[in-house]
Image (cartoon, rainbow, N blue to C red):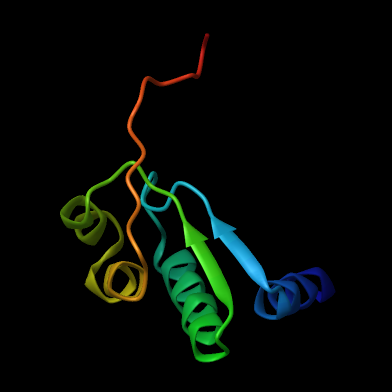
Amino acid sequence: MANVANNKENVLKADLIIWDEIGSKGLTQFEHENILSYINARIDSNKSNIYTSNLTDTELHTAIGDRLASRICNLSYNYEFKGMDKRGL
């Protein structure tokens, strides 16, 4: 249980967290509530977050729910990178 507390503390005190591949897999209710809690706490503390996803805003709302998606989409700048997929080359 100490590891869970340490991980949460690390997430909340880090200056920058990169949340990679948001919405790429379904979340359990437990995962959703924890991620929402972490992101809310980081936003309230003016901590920096970078979110990556291959989903559009609409797809993200469907994948992770309106509450979490609105925090990510409405409190972020959206940068779109275009190009060929480099995986598997």
